[in-house]
Image (cartoon, rainbow, N blue to C red; front, side, top):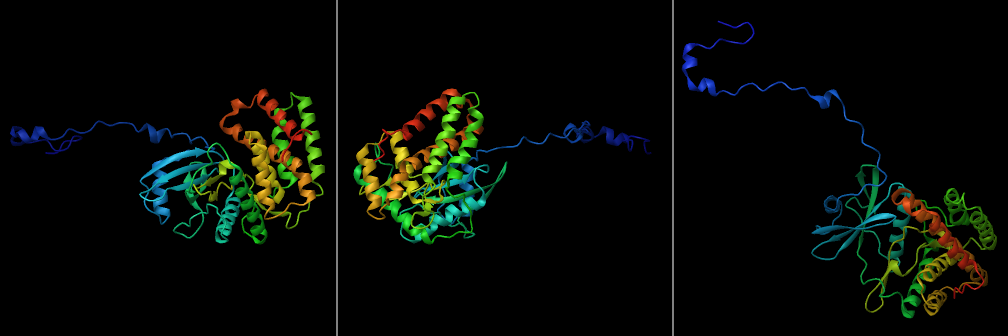
Amino acid sequence: MVGLAFGPIPTMQQLRSPAFFQRPSPQPWTFDWDSFWPKPEPLPTVCSTLAPAAVADFVAQSYAVEAPQACHFWHRGLSDVYLLETRGEPYIFRVSHRHWRSLGEIKFELDWLTFLAQRGLPVSAPLPSRSRQAYSTLNAPEGSRYGALFPSAPGSVAVGDLNITQAWILGETVARLHRESQSFASEGRRSALTTFHLVDEPLRTLAPFLHSQPEDWRYLTATSLQIKAKLRHLPTEPPYWSVCWGDPHSGNVHFTADNQPTLFDFDQCGAGWRAFDAAKFLQVALQTGLCRSVRDAFLKGYQSVSPLEAVELDALQALTQAAYLWSWSIQVNTLKWNDYSRLGGNYFSQRLCRLKQLGSRDCQLF
C-alpha cells in the first residue's frame, strides 16, 4: 500500500523493530537569505595591509631563496616594507602602493639599481624572481601591486648621524653613481626632476590648503618663481644632467664597521641635475641639524670625483629650496589618505618658516 503524500506505510513488523525509530528524522526546511538577498560589493581599498605570513609564503613561492622563518611588517612609507628572516641572511621585500607608482616607474628604478650593481656601485639591487624578473605581481584587494626582493644591506645607519669620513665616502659614491649613469637606459619611464616636477606640481598640491592664508600663498608663489628663474640657465645635458638618487641622506645608507657603504631606497629617483642630489643632501642635513663640517665633507667627497662647476654651485641654494618643496608635497599627498588630521594651519606655517630659512641670505649650506 502506498500513501498519497507520505511515502510507503510501514508494516507491523517494521513498527515492532527498534531500528525503525532510530532512523534520522528529516531536516527542517530553511530559507537561504544570503542567496535571496545578495551581499553588497566591498568598499574600494586605497592601500591594503598584506598579512606578513601571506607575504612570506608569496616570497617562498616566487623567489629562489631560502624559505623565510619569520616575516615582519617593518615600515610603511611610500611603499610597504617587510623584513624576512631566514636561517641565513635576512631579506627586504618592498611592496608598492598602487596609487603612488606605476609598473613603468617601478621598472625604471629596478633597472637602474641592477645597472649600478653590475658596474660595481654599492647599492642594494633587486633579486630576480623565479620568472627572471626584477619585480613580482601581487593580487591585492585594490588591484595589482608590485613587489621587489632585496638582500638586507650590511651594516647599519650611522650612529648619531654621519661623521666626516662617512660623509666624504657618501659624497664620493653619489658622484660615481652620477658618472656611471650617463649611459643608462630603460624601457621604464619616470618623471624627470625638472622645475615642473619639483616646483610647479608641488605648488598645485599645496594650493588648496592655503586659501585661508593669502600672505603665505603669495610668498610661496613668489618664491617658486625665484627658484625657477635661478635654475633656468642650468644645463640639461651631460655631465650636468644624469640619473639622480633623489633622496640621499644618512637614513638611506648603511655603513659597516670599516665604513663600507650600501645605498638603498631609490624610490624618488629620476633623470635630473646631478647638483640636485647634493642639494637634497644639504636640505635634509640642515633640517636634521647636521654640522657644517660634515656637510662640507659630503661636497668635498663629491667633487673629488666630479667637480661641480660655478653655475652648479650658484644654483645649490635654489635646488635646496626645490628639494624641500618637493618633499613637502610628497608628504602632503601621503597624509591626505592616511593622516589628514595633521594637515592643520600650524603644519603649513611651520614648513613655510623652514622654506624661508633655506632662502635667506644667512643660510650657510657649506
